[in-house]
Length: 61
Image 1 (spheres, rainbow, N blue to C red):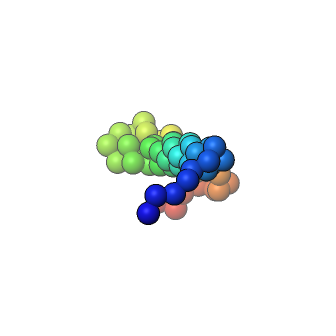
Image 2: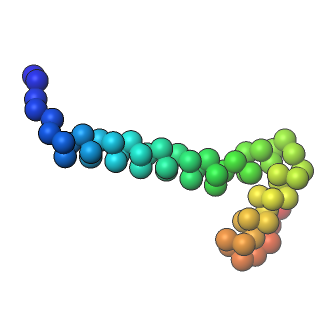
């Protein structure tokens, strides 16, 4: 039941948690303007501009 955790295992757990937190931060940054665009014209314009930069074309709607 009880197992030994050496320094390498602790470092790996910390690195996994830091990577997960960074991933959540990037996901939030990517979708925040899209989500907030539902409530604000300014945010919707920013989301459309960012999508245009990534895709290279105007949105169809």
